[in-house]
Image (spheres, rainbow, N blue to C red):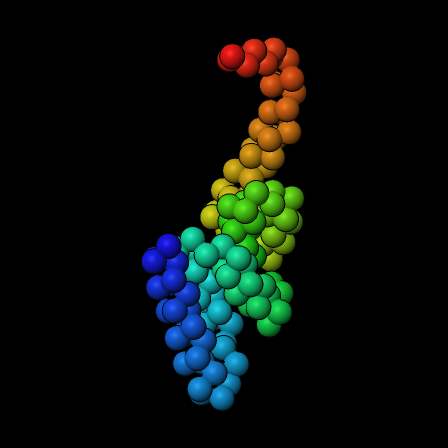
Length: 128
């Protein structure tokens, strides 16, 4: 819990530093802040930052790829898939995005197959 509080305080300091300059944070600042947030498990904050980058540059491969990772971490696989596909469209040769897209598709297939596999198994009786 203390780690998250410290992380939130650090985030507030970064934002206040940007605000004190009188200019909005640059997309590169937002991108780095999103990376920092993700490294500290603050996935909602990371999503917010990478969406801000995309407001400035809708074809930012780094933001699209990172957003896909964040969506996967949050269990939002269809959103992740859309982000990776947009990143591939912007940079078809990017091996990192290709790898993430492949993994995301595998995760979606696995999650789609999981209910069918468990439905075939008889649930164990509850212990008395």
